[in-house]
Length: 106
Image (cartoon, rainbow, N blue to C red; front, side, top):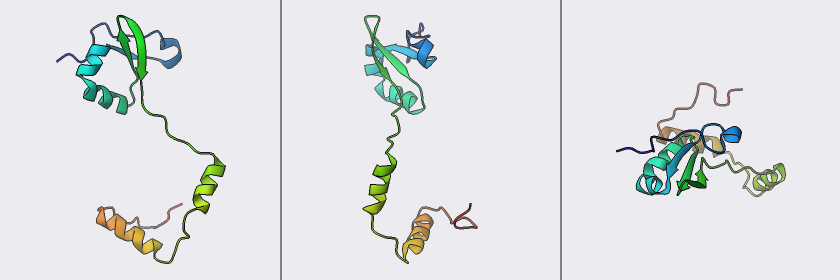
């Protein structure tokens, strides 16, 4: 199975985003799972229809928040109680992730 066209190469956007793989809309639809795997690995892929670029598929951008939004988030959370450390240890042990030698390395 050939996933991408043999003529894939630098795109119209190459001067601003570097190497971008091109594939046709038909190839994208037939190999959508593989396309998503490549995108998840960090690749950007141009989708073309009749030779014209119609979309660029790339990794999702991390969702960031302002410091005010972060402060509001923290203020809305319940305070940590004495059981927090024990709960954290139990979660890590349940997931086979032993606590480090120093619980809070700096």
